[in-house]
Image 1 (cartoon, rainbow, N blue to C red):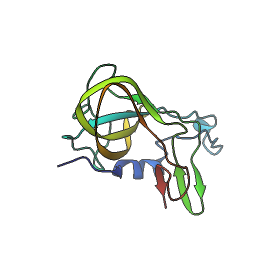
Image 2: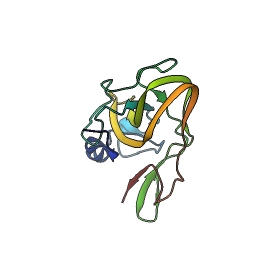
Image 3: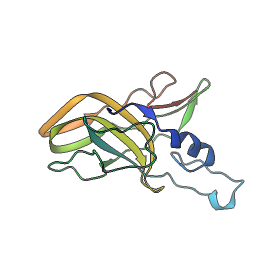
Length: 156
């Protein structure tokens, strides 16, 4: 089985439970959430031979890449853009490209998992791309436009 692109199934229900705080909105109806801060989102890369996808509930090191200057768990995602709506679609895209600097990842990889490291490493989504290797270089995942047809996370 291969990696697959998906918003993870667990994330869909956890959003409705309020388990993820991707923006800095203030919820005044709950005293414990009157001044929430954004959760930290991370991005981990996975080998072509891994099987990450919709069924992942949390970050896993199984099938994750390893190499020079790559730390298990990946990198922190820049999140300066709060979730919003575009028409009738809820949208969220990280505010900057995801960058792995001066890495050597000699085994082929084709997937990135976004996960919430603040909330027990709960998975958010997996995104696939063409098979890659990197030798002493920078690997960059460029973020799409944050709108209803292109945002990285879309709930219609």
